[in-house]
Image (cartoon, rainbow, N blue to C red; front, side, top):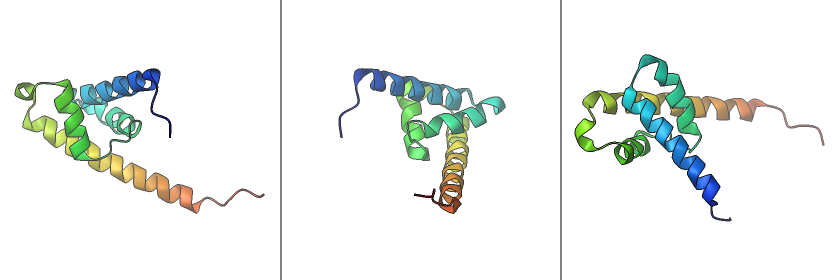
Length: 96
């Protein structure tokens, strides 16, 4: 596989930053956005989301609420990914 080009890396960093911003703000209306955005770079586990958050913000501004939100978003993202995979598996193969 070819390494990601500079444009792809920039786009990925923008998505990572948007996920981190949503997780940091932790507003009710950010929840669904954070779940959806987390799927773009493929970060659907709490550990990966906490890493994104700690890369974007210094530790001293992060609160237990941020960690709690990360775990809720990760759980929802994993559930959504599982549901999507199950739905795709149930779809009939297209005719040849």
